[in-house]
Image (cartoon, rainbow over all chains, first blue to last red; front, side, top):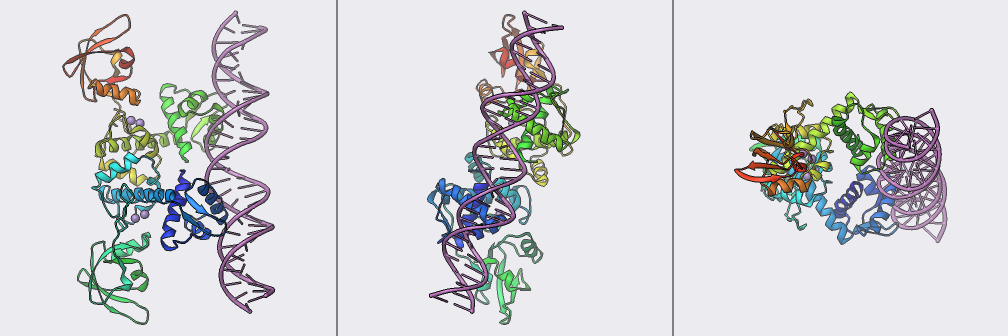
Length: 215
Length: 215
DNA sequence: ATAAAAATTTAGACAAAACTAAAAATAATA
DNA sequence: TATTATTTTTAGTTTTGTCTAAATTTTTAT
Ligand SMILES: [Mn+2]
Ligand SMILES: [Mn+2]
Ligand SMILES: [Mn+2]
Ligand SMILES: [Mn+2]
């Protein structure tokens, strides 16, 4: 697989999580910052290689092959993110773009030795699960902070989108993975939350609460 | 720079060490396993980007820009090799191909953090010097084993070519970087050497002796 | 049900990096 | 020096991945 093909497969994998019955051409184009016509061309090629099943105008799904490949790319991406944060001391908002490049390094042995070196982590710095060597992903019941019961203690376990701005906002509010969090009040007008984190009370917008996973 | 451009620049850098007054088109083609006509095309492009100075039929040299870039690619290659051997436990004959890919990862910050993480190594697993953050390379007076005085103690400090077969041969003979080595006798007919390594006597062909650096 | 809007695909073009075959320049040799 | 031989460059293709513009299909709205 070329780097470009890998990028398409990974995007289709991520989009499949929300539209399992078929991923739209436009959605792929949006994620890859490319044009719909380019996507169509690539879908034909991926289909010829039996990585996706594709019928004109009907959207696309991953084949067994494509699904396996996608999980291996995600595995590499997330293991490299762990390496960058745990070993090299990068902040969690700095690692995504570098991991986008590192995920395309070919060696199987490399990634398995890296896995071992990192002590077989199950989650990446953003709380996303890391597929193991067989592609098995640890499932965790997690809720968005916006869907949580009042006055019950939860633990922060992940972020939905890991944009730099969002992650830096969490840093500023001293919210990290593992932080204990209790929703004290919910403003019915705009769903703003009054929460307690690290024994301090802060208010959190609905947009933020919709991007923070707790458990 | 694209990956392909980086590969050309690196090859020109290495060939410049032996032909400083100009590198041949054919030599580049040989190293990159490509055709001379492809090399000519690329040299024009690199010349337009002020990475090489090139005049038809006259061979090519690196510009100041090209030289700086080349050293940064070599720096990345060798730092990654150290990482693979020291941290991930690869053997010294297994790391070259993986480093060929890793050397093209773009981030400056990444390579400097990696450098720090590895404790600013001056040499890679094959004894080749690693340019520092400013491109400065530590010079070492080293001789080929074939050029050495008899009955004098030397230390093995590097290999000239790091092909897997050669490195595995050295492993088999228990010759590693740092090994003490004394040439006892030199067969005048074919320049075969009788040497002492690790208090054991072994015979070494001229071809081997021409590829092993000592100090 | 028909028309308008949106999504998707086709057709044709382009840039990067490679190739083959042929022409041109340089180097080697008789 | 004249003639080969070698090296290098040019000319013309090919493949990959992208693009724009136009055509087609599907979806939405009247
Ligand atoms: Mn990421
Ligand atoms: Mn991540
Ligand atoms: Mn190497
Ligand atoms: Mn090396």
